[in-house]
Length: 118
Image (cartoon, rainbow, N blue to C red):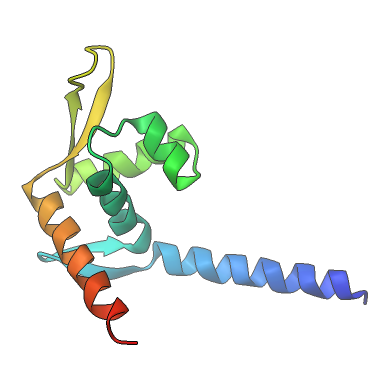
């Protein structure tokens, strides 16, 4: 077997393991279990006030459809809401709810404490 074929197989295995990790519910913020993708979507929204769906998809490197599905999951968990943009009535911004802000703040604290443990 050629070296590039071995490398391709290893890369595929790494990708599959990472996808499993992303979907696993392992983080609990305020009693709400979130996946890695969900909490990082909340972090992205909190880091970029006035964010719309197109910009969220672009920042996360995903399709608008995938971003829309994620926002719908987070809306069901009452972590985000949609509002008419202050810039234009034709635009919709994604905004953190009070529960979303708690999750965002706790996630920031987590990163602050883990990055100081070097």
